[in-house]
Amino acid sequence: MNEKLAEAARYDTLQLEGLFQRTRTSSVLALLPIVLIAALHYGHVATAPMLMWSVAMLGVYGMRILIAHTFISRQRQGDASPLWLDIETMTTAAAGGGWGAMLFLLNTGQLDMLFTVKLAFLAAACAFTMNSMAAVRFVYLAFLLPVFTIVTGYALMETPYLTAAERYGLIASASLFFVLLLIMSASVSRLMNEALAQRLAFSDLAAQLEISLDAERKGREQLEQQARQMEATHLQLHVFATHDPLTRVFNRHRISEALVRELHLRRRYQIQVSVLVVEIDGFADISEGRGQACGDQLLIAFATFLAADLREIDYVGRWGGEKFCCVLPRTDGRESLECAERLRRRIEDRRFIESDPELAVTASFGVSPAVDGDDPERLLARADAALYSARREGRNCSRVLSAEESPEADGTSVV
Image (cartoon, rainbow, N blue to C red; front, side, top):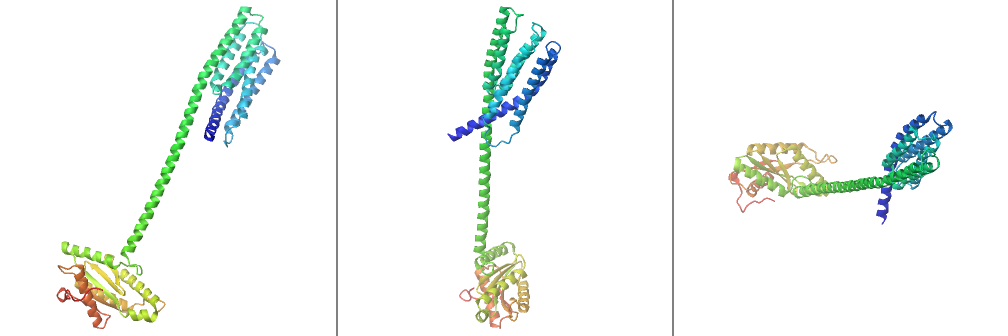
């Protein structure tokens, strides 16, 4: 119910806007005929009535222009007050009365050209005004009734120069013209109101379309936000699945995947690959002597050092505890041993914990280049055996184990 009332109020407001826009235009155009009629009657009628009619008509139409402009220029806050329509009806009735009063005030008392001119201007004013006021029919009726009433009164009272037949013929013609104008105004009003209803329908359709587009835009933004959240979650899960939570380097599973891939490339394209297994010497003693927090800090700094010092194509991962595994693509046995020695010397000279500069750290390296027929387990077993060899020889050294020196299947395994 409230929606219907709001729709009706909006319809009335738009109807008033259309009415006042036409009123302003038609009132401006009516100023010139008023001046022209007064000029034609100058010298043929008394000056005082002519000036009184001219000033009154110009004032009425000036007032109509001002009211129409005020309504159109108002700040549109809510629906228009019905008082505007009442004011428009009264000024319209005043304009119709002024056109009718022209016959009395500008009366030459004879059937002459000026009499014909007045009737022609009256007919033109009634027909022209219909186009601007028929949107609201009773407003147009407020213009016609004074005109018709005054013309009829003039024909009965002020036309001694007409015979009875001519007088009643004039009244009959005016009545017929009045009826025709009412019929035509009904048709014009229907067309205007249909056009206004279509305008409202199109406006509502455009508003609904805008709402739908806005909802679609918001839905798309939500989907994009969800997609970004899912992507971030996927990235976090991927990092969690492939990286060690403490040191942020690759975990054991990801290193195994990388090694499978590199061994496949070696079998297919004969691209060399080697493995380094690195262990921090005496880590258990450091952790026990300085605390678990110091041990964790050392592991993080050590992993960061390895990742930064090796190439971008190399893989660095934590294999477990204080042991790290590095996969070196495009590297043979000699190059991998040189890499291990370079890392070992740099570790020996480095202080990994700034708050404990007296802590000296060394590392042992087991090196193993891949050979034909290697799988990840066999290659890692050799590297791990090389690491144990470095331990036995006093630590802080690098040892390489070739395929001929590979441990038996039931021997060493990677831990």
